Amino acid sequence: MDKTMLPRHIGIIMDGNGRWAKKRLLPRTAGHVQGAKAFRKCLRHCIDLGIEYVTFYAFSTENWKRPQDEVNAIMKLFSDYLDEGLDMYEDDVVMRFIGDMTALNDELRAKIDKMQSETAGNHGTVCNIAVNYGGRDDILHAAKVLIKDGADPDKLDETAFSERLYTAGQPDVDLIIRPSGEQRISNFLIWQAAYAEYVFMGVLWPDFTESDLDAAIEEFAKRNRRFGGV
Ligand code: FPP
Image (cartoon, rainbow, N blue to C red; front, side, top):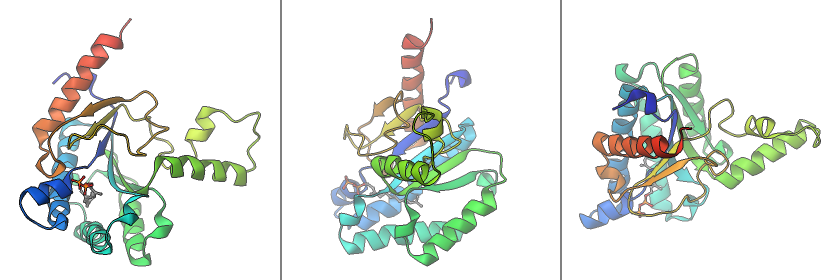
């Protein structure tokens, strides 16, 4: 792989967990368990490749509409992940949780704060996990912060706006990958994806492997070579 053609920031919509479970006559939650494993594998591969930023869409502002059991099971997966902590392989990763954390319970929020503060001084891949995240909510929240900051509308520009988003300080997303055959953006990083390349793949998220990530990056590099140059 040509390392100079790597995207700086990759966004991944982890979709297809339910269908993966259904195909195996398993409860939907089994798909999420397998999805969490695929997440870990994918993050490790991003580290190997030297990807600077990766954002995983783990729970949207709309996902609260799912059956309570399923919501609880997903929250438990987050909680277990935070308890396990990062291993040696991931010890230079900066972990960030983006979205409206006020809707999460105090215990989960405390664990998130702990992981964020423990990794804030690291220098490796920045991994955003989008939880209770919506692109519209991100934009609305930024607008509220700007108003509270007393921003002057005549001086407001895109840079100042971006600095109030949950991804403040990070580059826009270059490549968005959506597995599972769906071809929608589903309220993911809508401001940040203004110039993103989209790669839609048939594989269900729990089956997503390192080579699927490589294939998406190769596709990105091809498109960039065609359109990006002079
Ligand atoms: C979408 O698939 C998936 C989710 C809403 C949950 C994603 C959560 C995980 C993969 C767990 C992540 C864990 C950590 C530790 C970050 P779907 O359920 O909508 O699938 P379907 O479209 O096939 O029904």
